[in-house]
Image (cartoon, rainbow, N blue to C red; front, top):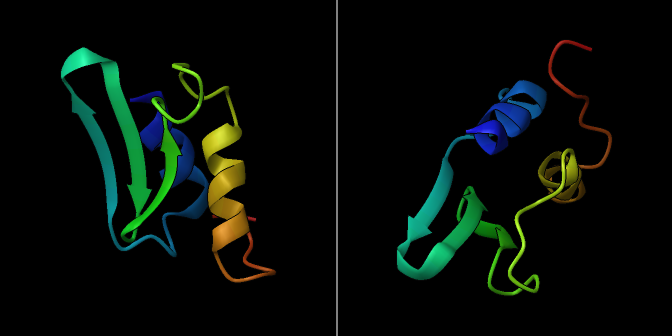
Length: 70
C-alpha cells in the first residue's frame, strides 16, 4: 500500500478516485480518476520506484498544483 500512501499523501486534495488494480499473474496497474498512470506489465514487469507514482501523478494534475500540505 506504499503506492496509495505516496499518492494520497501528495495529492489527496485533487484525487477523486484512486484504484490499485491487482490480479493474477502479477498484474499491478494504478489508475487515478480513470487515467492509467502505471502498468507493471507495460514497464518490463517491474514495480514502481519510490516517488515514481507521485511524479507521474504530478504530470497529469493541473500545472502548478501544489503537493498537499505545502
